[in-house]
Length: 145
Image (cartoon, rainbow, N blue to C red):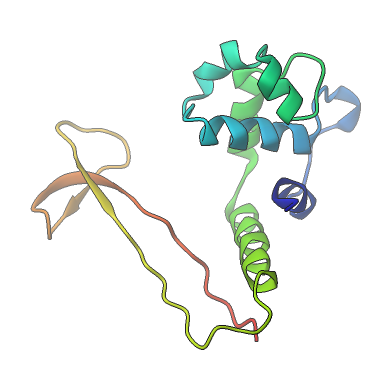
């Protein structure tokens, strides 16, 4: 489908290219594929960077990026980057249909995770009557047809 290539093209790479060992596309693929495999934490990449299957999937023969390099990638992103990624995903959705659907239902499925303590990102949810961390999918709705 070329999603990671499209996202890499949509992102601004402000790094000094002469100092880069990894392309933006390789970094994106490494991070996305590791997330898809269930490796959420960047510290997992200490081991994963030498994984031959992940190296093959990212089209890289050499050692993959370190957790610190991936962390810098994530910290360079901003709202404009998020909007650009949403636009890539939305465009892919539009291209997947021969004609526009008559209606589009956005299903926001929040998962309530109760928290006990003062964790980062917590908030009080009135419906559940406790502090929690809710993970949900968000969509940017745009006029496409």
